[in-house]
Amino acid sequence: MTGDKTGTTHDLRIGGRPLAPLLRARAPRLSQRVLERLLSELPTYTELPREAVAGDVADIVQHSVRLFADVLERRRPAADAALARQRESAAQRAEEGVPLDAIITAYHLGVAMIAEELTADARPGDVADILELQRHLLRTQRQLTSAVSAAYLETRQLIDSQEDGGRHALMAALLAGEPVGDRSGRRGVLRPADWYVTLALFLAPHPDETDHGRAPGAAIAARRKIRRVRVVLDRYAGQPVMTDLDATGGTALVPVPAPPPWDELRGLVAACAKAAGAPITAAAATADPADPAAVPSAVSQNTDIVELLLRTGRPPGLYRLADVLLEYQLSRPGEARDRLALLLAPLDHKPVLLTTLETYLREDLDRTATATSLHVHPNTVAYRIRRITELTGLSPHRPTDLHHLHAALLARRCGP
Image 1 (tube, rainbow, N blue to C red):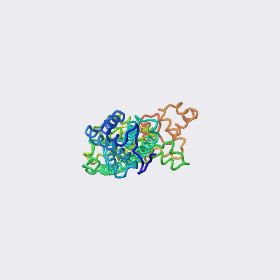
Image 2 (cartoon, rainbow, N blue to C red; image 1 turned 30 degrees about the vertical axis):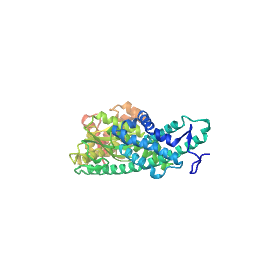
Image 3 (cartoon, one colour; image 1 turned 45 degrees about the vertical axis):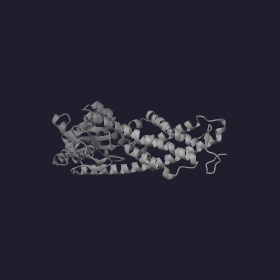
Image 4 (tube, helix red, strand yellow; image 1 turned 90 degrees about the vertical axis):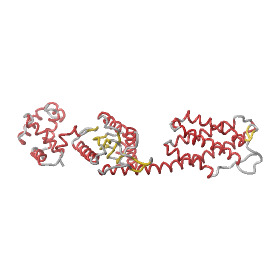
């Protein structure tokens, strides 16, 4: 009777042949077949440099086949030290950006091909040896999966920590208006992009965040929302984007080779909103990092624009300064803004009249449309407009007064 221990009475055999010598003899040919399957079934491996596939990948495939032969010969688990080459290879794949699932799939494919190779000539009397073979293969596969995953994740954690540190330092320097040079990162240095699209984003809550009865669930939903937005930005840039985002939004610096068309940026923000599952209000401007003041100036202006958009009730979407010139100017502190706001001071304690005026102007002085919006009779609208004129001295039917009324409302909305 065979077993998973020393002192067994005979070598593992299938079809009358001992498995360990058979696997060693067939290792070169079998390894080549495994490599061909990897390249045909796992596209990630076709993206590696040819020398990497012909060198390290081919070597580790054959080394792993021979490891299984050693396990079958000793009929005991592989020693931890025997997995060192696989750990080193996993760390190298992590540096090359090969996904972990592709690496694990490659090992599973290799184990399946070893099993097929060794059981091809099985006979009815080989059942016990086949079962022991399966136990050895599955146990060694678990060992490899654990060792390879640990080495891969450790390397990725180190890489991500170094790269995130470099990006954080670069972003901090750009936002502070400091001259930026090369910053340390995974590939030696992180160089400033030729241009940056500076984005200020306001992220509305995702529906899952509004479940006040499940605070931990709301926090998870917020993190998922942020992560999905980052994925869209990274995909657009073709590299990790520098971001400082929380559940309500923040700042993103998107590296670009040249200022992109505005419609392209509008599409980018729309894609972010779709991925987030929540409306996004944003402002954008393109900045040249060669000018240390360009990025912080653009970020500050974008932030002001987004705050202005939210105060004035603009719909979600992407805006630039040209879209809100009048509102932006009126939002700047000064005597002119204060005096404009005072024009409507007589309506401070008459919210019905103020709402009627806002609606009347929004409806382009259409009394019927205003009445419909306010759910009142058109004659009521006419009466209220007369009262507004009596109190303020301004009539929306006089062109000069109309401009003043528009500006006064904006000054009130844009002010502190």
